[in-house]
Length: 100
Image 1: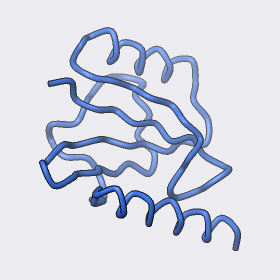
Image 2 (image 1 turned 180 degrees about the vertical axis):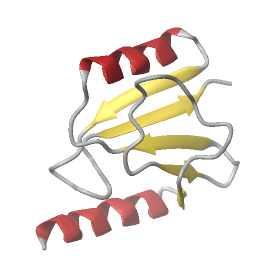
Image 3 (image 1 turned 120 degrees about the vertical axis):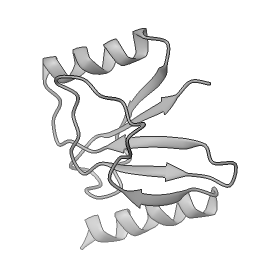
Image 4 (image 1 turned 45 degrees about the vertical axis):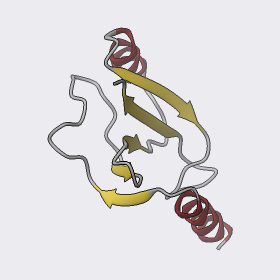
């Protein structure tokens, strides 16, 4: 039950900050072998900024290398945190933002 409450609080914080959630990733999403895509969704705000999110329970070395390669490409900004929306306290929260 606490996980559900944490999820609801995280979602409400996103909404209060102006973000809207869409399930899945679109065709502009980053791609690459090893890239973790677990419980993936997109966040968009009023000015159409887009953030791709994935929430794996664990990240392999291959997945970390794939995320690092995205960041090195200069096209994406990658952040790994603990504020998972779907499984608070049990999954990571990885955001991948396009760099404009």
